[in-house]
Image 1 (cartoon, rainbow, N blue to C red):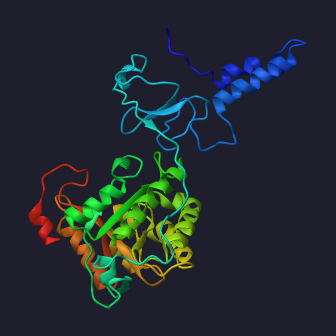
Image 2 (image 1 turned 90 degrees about the vertical axis):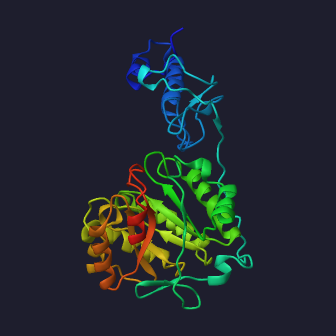
Image 3 (image 1 turned 30 degrees about the vertical axis):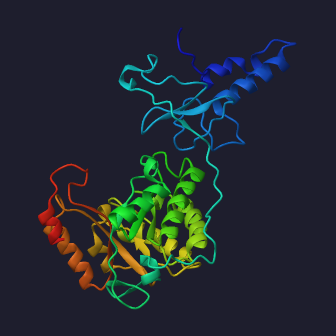
Length: 362
């Protein structure tokens, strides 16, 4: 049998009450409302997905009896049932197998960390305490420069399988990390489409890092944050109040701006978010810079106003070499602090050689 398809809005116009015959108006009106509901969904549940939506970001379905079934890392769909393997009714270019894993709805209740939580004895946070910035250096509560080493997780909407307490604890015990970065995806199926799902993932990782006595970065992982200022304000208002009293947490407010103007676009957005966070905490704030967080020299010429601010420098050693290091040195000469919240030994796309010699130069 041919696959069932939902009616389009255009097809529904022929069922509008105005076209119904006398005596059938009420029946047609009711039918019109039901069919419109199937297409548009219930307005009281705007966070759930319809039959043609990707439900990875929401993990809930509007239609009664439907569940969110996973196809692959990038796609899941609301359906009444699912058979693992190839679906012959998928278009030829999309005939990859379905895993049919069920993504259950997420309940977001905020943090589970007590307000009087004390870092575990012997942990890196117990040893170094509250971080701050002095000149070009990140320093600990004793006034000593500190170097944090750790791991950045992958975009939350695509790498969710690793956003678990078990992974955080394993990285601490096996890799001896002192820092975890939680890059919460904003666009492309992230926070903008599934706020509670993303906030739940962030709190799960942050809570695990806090319990393990690690430092942790809450990262607004966005390339166009200046276009999502109100959403960022809401997020950082909540999370700076929730975690701002803990010495573990650093806030990264703009992952990688692209080619926007530092003066006209990036700096005004970041200054607004810095000021908002400062209403609740003096914890370190990591501020993205132009050109995929590489133009740190430009930011240093026209810095933000505030204390305990560091500027983001991202490098991938097989690609970014002496030219980018010169930018970094120029920024340091201007007196700002830099923070490499993301770096690698290979190319920026994950390919290329592992350039360990260039990494040592960095």
